[in-house]
Length: 418
Image 1: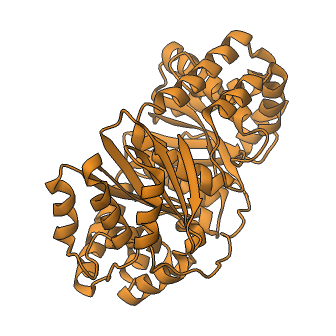
Image 2: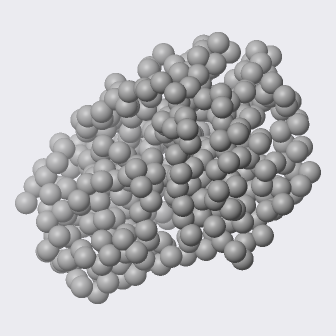
């Protein structure tokens, strides 16, 4: 059973109780991420997430990991464009310990200067690793091309230089100004009693700022191209268009369309481009969303010569999609999405995360039944309309590797014209 309560300071608490669970998954989700950063502090949200584990006023870095692992628990965190999450999973008898540690690190982290200098080195190694991973890096290029000179287009990790410029005081100021009660959600699932959990949260979360902060800068889609020549064996490329925000009425239509186009081994792109033509090892479509925009596109990794054929075939598949959609494909895509929703419900940690994200995005918990009903309501005509609409927009192309034979951007635009 899902229950929600707002604490006296404005923090929202969600519990999703299960009588058969022997564990509790809990965490704090803060609706602050890379989109809240200016260019000079790009990467500070991610750096703060790292430093939160490097010691508080009452625990050392080793204490944090030791206390959790002494009871067999798991603790971790992640940073996104719109949110940062800190979470732990422990057996039900250690739930209070897990809550105490998580609430400690989001309120009382000390940002020790010595630890920060070491952690900067770790983050720069993470950036270097990303730069050596072309199928990740090409998505960063895509974002900065689709949304240039704005927070949404910048990398979550920042750059080596912006990370080097972060100081302990900048981190503390950022945490104290951005980690406010109205942006903070505590979510727990599994062996949790709502009233007891709320009381424990009320007792522990007393050092959180309560001032209001503005929303993230509104995204403005531009599109265009970025090509980076690298001596790789493969060309990694992403090609797409502005998609739909989470609350856009066409969001689920876009999700179904991406599944039909490139959502599995039976999808059109997999069958035509990999199975029939042997042009790629990996190809898939995506429909990613933000609170105010989204991206609908295709990723592919292919050889230097094969890319000559790849993009023309991809354009042809996009052009013919609205007029050749079949009910069989649509039914398969609906089944795929429904199954994914229901199977994720079997993981209690997923419950805690999904409930928190729902509250951040929608301001309420969206039931799986509501989502399934929206998916089921999509008709052939909806998919045809959105498929036609997408390819009339200015596209975004990012390509990385031996790019000599990648189709010219203007030629792609011409090829997509009806």
